[in-house]
Length: 64
Figure (cartoon, rainbow, N blue to C red):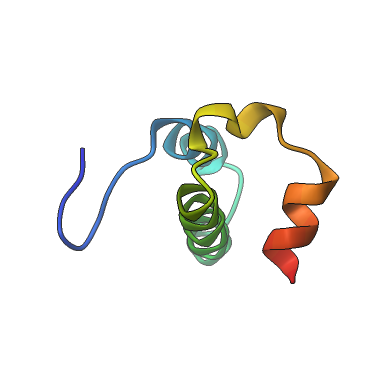
């Protein structure tokens, strides 16, 4: 589902949902924000299709 302001990325939402009962709402929100930035980075590099196979070079690029 994509909408103007919010969108759902299934793998990210599944991971967050699995942790909502374990973490505080602020922690979940912080992870959600960081993961949204990560996903946007992958979209810009056209790498969302292989998100599960990315390694250190992709993470280093994201952090820089």
